[in-house]
Amino acid sequence: MTEAEARAWLAARNVSRETFSKIEAFLDFLRDEASRQNLIAASTLDTVWARHVVDSAQLLDHAGDWRTWLDLGSGAGFPGLIVAIMAPGHVTLIESRAKRIAFLIEAAHIAGVSDRVEVIGSRVETAPRRAYGVISARAFAPLPKLLDLAYPFTDKSTRFVLPKGKSAAEELAAARASWQGRFELVPSVTDSEAAIIVASGVTRGKTRR
Image: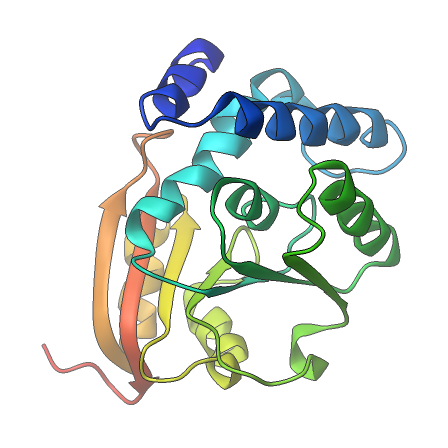
């Protein structure tokens, strides 16, 4: 997906001019801050709309109805801040690195979503436990470990939307050894070799085939 195709993909979903402006303000801040800390791979700065914005925004197509969203290991704000900019719910970002925490707080302010974004500065293991409607994590941990860390933040209605690369099918197969629920692999719109793991009704225990 090219940068032009990424913008067209968003436009086709009736993303408003105001929302585009908020994303652009966030990206301007990201590019500026990237000179001081390693937020995203330098090689992706010129393809940020496809590699990061749409790669994040596509998760909304698989999230269903939600009021609360938890993003684990939020880093540079993908997908969490893009979700907050594009949708009206409350988004919680968990990030343990001090510079990233400061970045996320300022980025939420610049994008005009700080009233709906909570940044929790801690490791996932020590963050306050409460259930969320949707949980996401990008480049955070292999699926079995990710589910183990995220499980305290779930209830029976929680849905996972997890962007993964080439290893998606292998990670899902490994997770089935100790987790059950409804799991689906959905192709990514930004990378033909990547997929999104969409899961609901996740509980501990081997999945019945």
